Image (cartoon, rainbow, N blue to C red; front, side):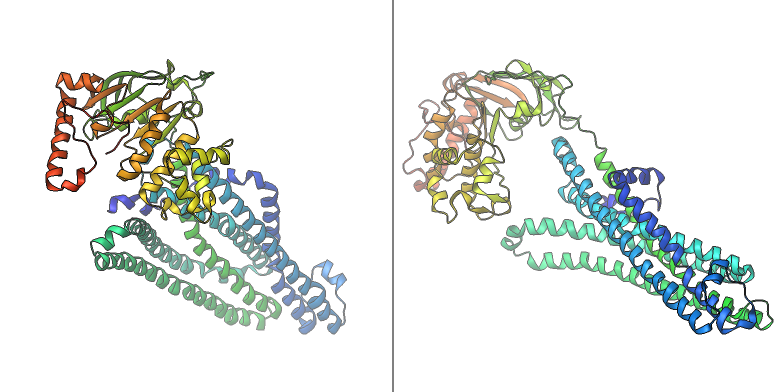
Length: 638
């Protein structure tokens, strides 16, 4: 299990210039807003150094005039010689507007960067989802859904935190520190160095803190990944859990994963609980040194009282940004790790793409041909090899064979979900690799064994956003697949809400909606992949005749396991271990007494044995045998 979460464990560098340059490209559309925020944060950092200096001027000029401290010429000309008036000027004309300006600057930069962070997150999620839609199915064969969801949600959220607060805070703290250091050195370099003497201790505490938090953060991320994966798997499989009475066992397993997350957070809390008081204590230690040594220097006349008081305030302001910078280190490190994972996903090459010069399909006829096709999902295991057969326009071809013979793989190659490695698949005589994917796939309708419905309404699940499918067309296709009465019996009719994966519908109802979806788009080629395996016998009987009419004059490719249901196919292709072994009509293949004959005979014996065990199962069914085959209507089943 640890290998599954290895990618979540890796934190990488705290700062990667290559990743940061790429991240900053997402700020280009909002560079004016970002520039304004940076100006605001620079001014904010400079203004942080002003209040202690104003206190120094007030003390030295009005409260301790004997100090004869120098005042900047601008302030000297502005301030009144009258102490009461001068103090009021400092308090209400300079200090109060400075505080108000600081408030608005902080608000402006915070609002601007929060807004930019949301816009960047919006853009990045759009880019990720667009890229995910273009990636080939082989990518999804290798990557679990939970990991991809984490990329689009949690990892993007981490980058939003970097843009919205982390990056701004780092710049703000840097300029605040720079302003304070410049002012302290200009006032008295000896007291400044005395204050800075505490920095080595701050560095030691910060290094220890970052090591501890780095490890706890790694464990937190891994625990969150485990919790997400566990919840997704067990909520999806809740039916199996309840059926096999695994509630207690599942609860115990979840309790262990949840406890690991709590323990990791407890270590993080302990680190933060020790770090901030430690930095606060060192800041107080610096203040104590200034009070003791600075006070002695003031008594000796080496510094003014106002300067000593200003240094006390500067020392307190000096260590606060250091605390914030240490905390933002974790945001920066998490952002670099998330950025690396996101860009790794975005850099995944799209191998199934439109050709540089696609061949247009002016008037598609629906002819399909497999020409010496070979394909393997893995290099060491061929699924199909040297497969050749053709489906003429209006012809119905059935593909049969054992499970794993490669039947569904052929339909995936036809729709170019995967590219063939040998040979070619042709549509209307053109290699499908020379066609636009959109032009190719819009000519196909497909009904799978496992139907998939989206959150929305019944109408939206049939239309799938395709314009031109009218309400009358919806009713017609629903009637043809015998689901119109059911839809009209619902309170909302075709506007009835459909929950996630069609949770409120039965499997058979979802399958019928999949039929309606395929037929509503009026495809040139209809693919049925064991499409009625989820439909009960009564419903199957209702749609048999509709399928017979719908398959007339339409190219159809039918994958089936129940051989007695495909006897009217124009041609039957028998696939065995990835090779085409037999091709012919139902009667021709029976007369050859080859693989198809053995499969048919085996199914007949299974049906006969089942009838002996349960006579009611064959009530109303005609007996069939290899010699007296039932030429019933075409359909499929598992």
